Image (cartoon, rainbow, N blue to C red; front, side, top):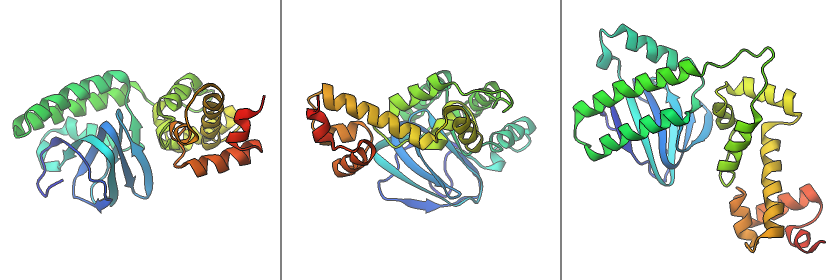
Length: 257
């Protein structure tokens, strides 16, 4: 993230948290591992196929979680001077929620373009060409996944459950769940509670506990390994949460008939 960055590039974020702002818009898409962003006071993890939008002059913090790779698309106004359609597409993109989830098709295209940039890191012409293509991919992606009207809309729980299953060993935010079904976070939260009868956070916690019970009874994993597999930050935290929820410790649950 230099003073005059390339229009698009693949980078890794450091493990220590940094924060800054810049006078241009920026799109960040996760390629490998996880990164953590806080944009305008709203924090979320960004993994493969997930992304966030950073507006110009918007203060944001970011940090890498272990080995990571992200695609960054920098959008200084002058790069598209005279291109009214591109400016309109960028404006529409940044009118939505800051965090999003991409579908499989968009992820495949972005991965292919990122591979070209990784293979040719000093090719600024390629960087610009990839940025143009990436913005078209994003525009088409969000055009084809317009958030449906709230009236009569029901959440596709199969998609939500699949997302939770795929990421259950990690932190899962409401923003990420909302992005998986292409809804704004506030709209998703309200619809979810109305349809499921509980909050997204509680629903994810119940999924973690269900997996934990299965692993305790059916696997040879240690309690520390089970805690990690189910997305708890520590064995002690897992034990305390499990005991509060079920009224029995994981160790006692294991030997209960």
